[in-house]
Image 1 (cartoon, rainbow, N blue to C red):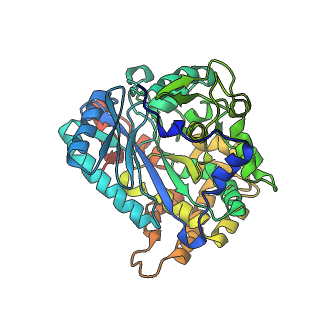
Image 2: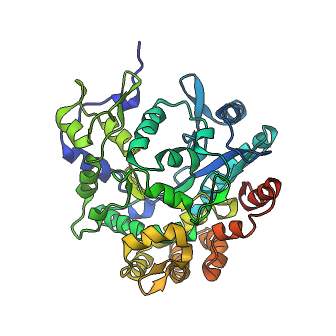
Image 3: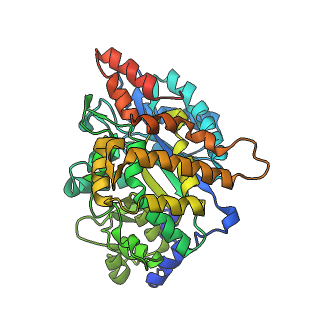
Length: 450
C-alpha cells in the first residue's frame, strides 16, 4: 500500500489565480520581516581532498541522528537528510551538505544556528576522516568519480541535464553555494526586491567569487560555479527579464514558471518522470497528465526545480554567492539584509546599478571578478559603495536592546572590496607545489570550521 506524501494531498488547482495567491500569502508585516540562510559545503576525504563517498556521509548523518536533536529522513532505505525543530540538514546530489537555517529576525540568530551546526558536524567529521569546505566547486574530483545521492528525483534530473547544457551534472554534483531567503510586505515591495536582487547578481558573483578550480586545475574563472550555472539549463536558470517591466506583478513570475518544463510529479509515493515530452506546468494545469490533475503540492515541487538567480518559493531567494569560508558565510545575509530591507539603501543601490549592461556584466563577472566593467566604473567600486550602503541600512534596522551590530558580519569583505582581490585569486596565488602542498593550501583557505 502506498503512503501519500503532502505533495499529493489537497484539491486540484482551479486556475492561475490560485498560483498568484500562493505567492501573495508569503507577505509579512514590515515589523515582522525575517531572513533565512541556506549554507552548502563540499564534503571531501581529508587525506586526498577527493569528494567523499555517500556511505561515509550517511554515517555522519546517522551519528547526528543518534546524538543530536534531529529526525532522520529516508529514501530508498538510505538516510538522506535530517529535520530539526527550526532547521534542517539536507544533501545535494553529489553529497554536498547543506544547513537550511531557521527563519530569523536578524543575522545574529542565523549565525548562532550556523555555529551550532558546525560544532555538531566538526568532531564527527574529523573522526570519519571528512573535511567540510566553504568552496564553490569540488577542487579535485571529476564528475564521473562522484557518486549520486540515492534519491529518485536526482536520477530523473541527471538524465535530463545531459540534454539541456554542458554543465548540468556538474552543477548537481560539483558545486556549492549560499542562498539567502528574504521576506516582502506586499506585491510592490516584492517586485522591487526581485528587480534589485537580479541587478545585484553580477556583484554577488564577483564579490563572493570562491571557485577557481575544477579537476585540480585553474579554470580561468574566479567563480567556476558561475560558469557552470550559466550553461546548465536556459529554461530554468539565469535571470527573468520580464520582472524588470514597470508593470511586473506576482502574475509575471507565475507566467514565467508556468512555461518551464516539468521534471516530475509524485503519485503513490513515487516520482513520475515528465521529461520525456515537453510538459510545461501550464500544459499540466490545462490538461493534466495520465489522469492526474495539478495539485498545490505539484506547484510547490515545480518551484523547487527552478534555478534562477532569484526565485519565489514564496519567499524571495537570492542564489548567486559561492560557498565561503566560515567567517564570511553570514556576510552574504548581512549584505542583502542591509541593502534590501532598508528603503533608502535599496533606492540608492538601484541607482548605482541603473546604467550597467546587466546581461554583459552578468556574463563577465564569474571570470573577471571585481575587475568587471559596470557602466562607467567597475564592480570593485560598486562593491565598496554597496558595503557602505549596507552598513547604513543595517544600522537603521538595529533592533532595540540588540547590543551587537549586524554590520560586524561585513567586516571581512572590506579587504576584498578595497583591494579588488577576491578569495578565488588568493587561493590561486598559493596554488602550487605537490598535491600535499595544494591540500594544505586548500584547507587553510576553506576548511570548516575556520
